[in-house]
Length: 132
Image (cartoon, rainbow, N blue to C red; front, side, top):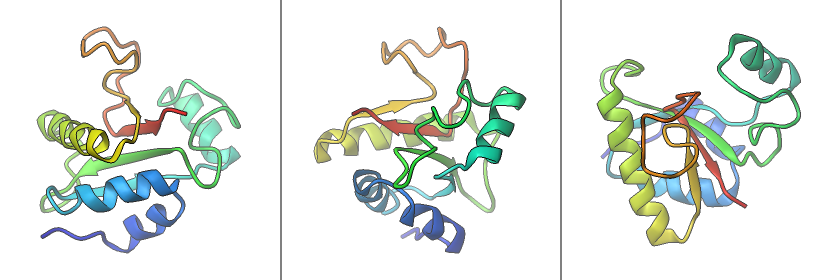
């Protein structure tokens, strides 16, 4: 069974308790790493400048503690950034578990939550955030 490594555990501690519950459940079924939780001002504004975020600090769900947003990357013999199918598999797993746990999510692969994965202006497959 997969387990979180030290970096993932540090990020996990900074997440909203609902995200912590969800990810602790999900890691039992599929290996992934937590690569981002809380982002401070400098890190968030860099992400905005690079175009990997549409929000400046402090307007992202990554910009609070506990963080309402998390970035996850599938893991098998290293991070699998280029494996789109693994990201979609992980998203399906998380949505199934989130329904069971009554946790409401939005995913960066389907921002408008219409199940059309081709109509996004920003495709951010690692990103998941709480709806609240």
